[in-house]
Image 1 (cartoon, one colour):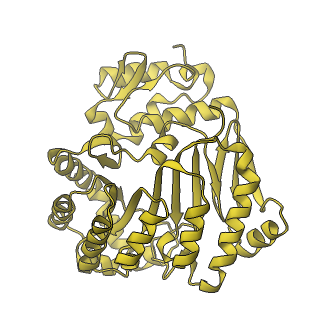
Image 2 (spheres, rainbow, N blue to C red):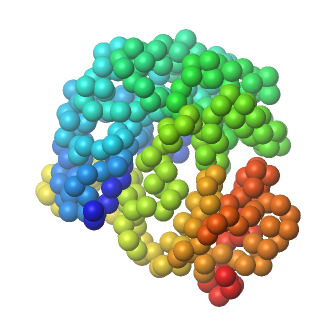
Length: 371
């Protein structure tokens, strides 16, 4: 089967923009939701020729997709091509029993719930609208509606967070028994109001990140989750298939403001202007975009770097020029990477060191590799 099998849909609307967020978001704009969905479907029609007849995954991200007006969200979901996995991101305060049933009825198969923490003071620091009880209620609303594939997002390194607080968050999450957990290090971009408000504490937390990371892995692996990607854990067979496509270097199409597509040797990004996006698609033309050619060596390096985040070997086939042979030999001697079958994988210790090991393995130029 030919054609791209992974589709990303960006829904930028939020009730509030959290201080640490650097995604393409728009606060409120309820009067614009219908026009934006019209534009999304127009862009989808323009890009339909790129997509396979049957998709493997569709992912609705944001923003807060579940903040979108329910009727418009249902209309969008109903119009999207069917896929084996259809994920919708949700903030807890938006999830009511009615919304949960709407998502399931409209074709969603998986929900990614942005819990972030179960500690009220930490949720306040993060400027989240939902308290701990709202997180739990949202989870149970989704279960009651019939969802059997729920992911929870947690953050660590939050200003004011202690190891005990993180341990409590992990215990709370494990008790809910989601099929998937994403646990991310908090990254606050320089210059945001969040870094101005919490800069000193963020610096202190940076020193504890390695400890937090090890605690996360120990707790979740100990609870029977597979540590299949650097920040992601799942029950058997419950990997996030859409995100796995990114890590495996698959082609994907993204629609919506700020959305990125990578197809073959070309990447393009829609500009983040709502007005320009809607106007272009109302006129049946492609939205304003930035184009980036991708030479084969660039794609190879990306596939290697992303693939090394996984717990399964990255195949050498087609990537030999991206591997620094001397670096691989050093990492093997240090017990941080190993060859397995026809591929390469980081050891458990190497995965904890992550980016530093990967930097040693990726060739600066194709000529450095002699594999």
